[in-house]
Image 1 (tube, rainbow over the protein chains, first blue to last red):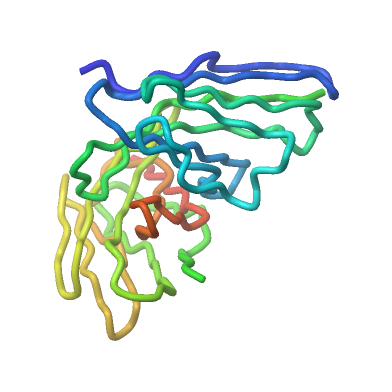
Image 2 (image 1 turned 180 degrees about the horizontal axis):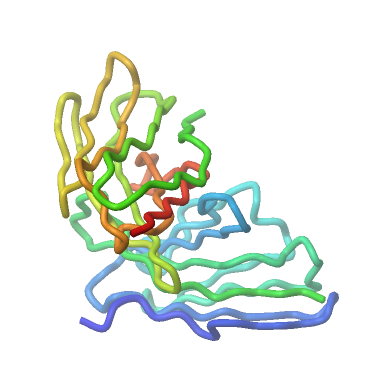
Length: 114
Length: 111
């Protein structure tokens, strides 16, 4: 079991550029979640996939944000026209088909927008 | 809507001291409750959980009891160690088992 993997771990970009983060969940997990965490705050829910279907999106997920999970395996989170307020840690988590409520988190991808 | 409030940190203790981190919640229905921990440089990991009222979750010497009457899930440990230094997050489960987190409480334990 290799755990949830996220890439890149750290991305520095200039305002206005597009960035994409990738998440590889634990292989047998069909549920996948994206969260955003800013300094001194707890993680905030962004979106949820069950297999390839995106079933819920937070109001935090503006139209500059898009997430996909083709084939129900890995997922990508793209941020277009980045703003300084997008600087945060983006966390991915997964859980198995018969969830006990526990989410398994990756180490996160830190975005810095200059 | 559902929300979690936990005590602000940082909490600074000497080794072997008693720890309490307060957590209260607002929720419709009866959510499951969790404590997650984030050690420096690592991802969030589950510390303990409770799925119904009066359940006690425990792990690594930490305990928390699901109190419906006070809508609380306080984290306790009888004797902390330096290795317990981390950020602790209280959370509840919402729809689709998504978690709603508190702001986190940083714990620093000194020898």
